[in-house]
Image 1: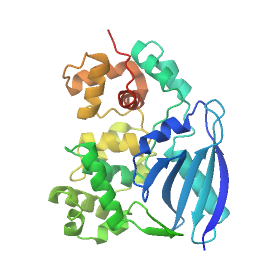
Image 2: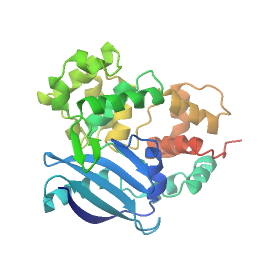
Image 3: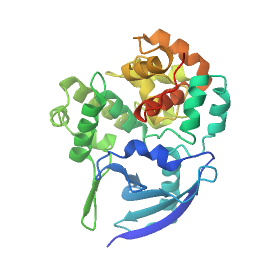
Length: 310
């Protein structure tokens, strides 16, 4: 028997939910996906699994989300509150995009792209651990291959939720990964080293030696990078990517990322190869929203937006 609860969540305007959620449109239906206007994801809240189905019932200027929660146990008011907090975090609902738009007003390229992507916010992983694992997997391989490996990892180690005839999987917790062997992790298709890195990070978290969630409250970005860089297998690029996608640190620009350098070059340098220093120099014009601006460039490229610097 499935238990269902519903709630509505308001967001800071402007916010275009459908545009923001489009990045998940090709996701695995058993893990995380956006289809027919509904975003689906398994959340682990208060030690049990909940399927969250999120859709828009508002407009870009008056954004409001409808959230339906489904589980195999009765849902408490505490579950609903935690679910709302999770949805708010995942879609960065409290972020005021207007501050970003004002900052880039003098940048013809970025402001032109922003007009066509008006209301786009950058999604965040529910936990920092998920972002860290994804970033480790993505080291030196294509995003397409990385996503396939991430999905295999989730289905092998993630907790399972059966609702009706459908089966869903949650992202594995550090506790689950820590008790697995490196060989088991490697069998999803990862290299030996990446399996060791993921296992090692999970062990540090379980032992209380690495507080990823606690790092979200650290204001000094360099200090966060330093602490993450001290973990085996996590360099500056992995740390910056983890912060951008898992901590809502929109000031972070993983300039060593080839994909980010490519889109910056496409829109600002005529497509010629640029190095990390050149990418950071261009990003100075975006102020403290460097990571968000890079995300806009990535989505602009996906959608074929052609505004470029002359």
